[in-house]
Picture 1 (cartoon, rainbow, N blue to C red):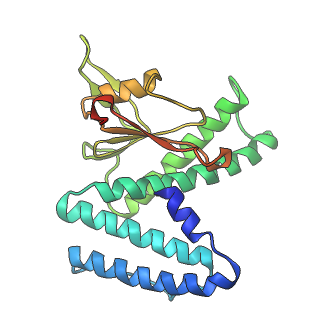
Picture 2 (picture 1 turned 120 degrees about the vertical axis):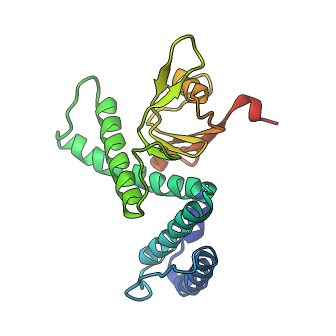
Length: 225
């Protein structure tokens, strides 16, 4: 879904006026859909954005508003699962670009390797940005609710109680931000599936700078058809 949204809005030149027209239409549709769920909703705006970047940001904000409205009024987490992926993917790409600059300038603390230092920087930046975004919407990402950032998830599947630590959990989906490719054979991924909240999917989020297949979803084996 994230890749589809990016390709859809990668428009320039003569198509920019059409993009603005579509943005107005989609914005109005989203506002009406949110009000159908939350009649008290009001979209605060200083006016229609004139740049393509501003128009994309407006649509992303409205999508997130809609996802939160579903969460609050019906305890429906699926829209927030999608918007969390969209938000985190963008922040991962930004954090990577910033981290590379810091690494080249010698401003990252390197212990084991440059990749480890870069990965730690991206993890911290993305988690901080996501916590801030959730906080703006009044979502407690540190409590016992269905939306959590870097919190312990108990695993009672073994003889002794242990825990897993996904970067993000939204409902029954775990998210892992990483520079390396991971599969169902990766112990960390298997551990997420063993956690007591029984995730149906683990979303691996990697920077899009490495190619089109950067981020992907691993499905719980018994859920496959």
